[in-house]
Image 1 (tube, helix red, strand yellow):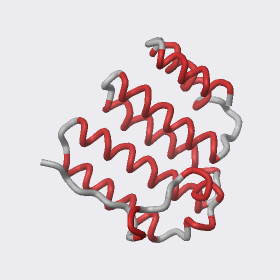
Image 2 (image 1 turned 135 degrees about the vertical axis):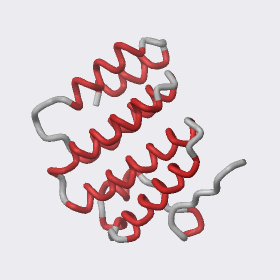
Image 3 (image 1 turned 45 degrees about the horizontal axis):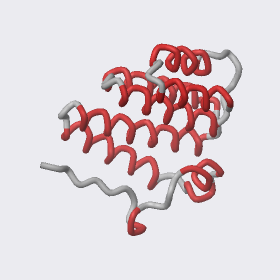
Length: 142
């Protein structure tokens, strides 16, 4: 986990290449990745690519993170898939593609509705409860 702290420091200092190198090293490790580390890794990539306005790269890497989740229990894989779709939706909004963002949010919601996520340790530790208890909320702007 020290590597992710270092990544945050590198991003704050504007050392984006160094931050990306660290993240890529973690993602490309041959050993299995834990659910918590994968969630944190996806968030760190999101922070990096938003800081550098590299939204297409964020979309690509979010999908790679989902591929790394394939060895995890099905429930965690579905949660990571939904999380990636939410990250991608944010990138789509930044790129002005609100219709694509809405489709990704809808798909993420279907993943979460079809999975008893409240039983997942990842859900309990990382994802706040949905707004108003009605699942994900998406209101297109403008």
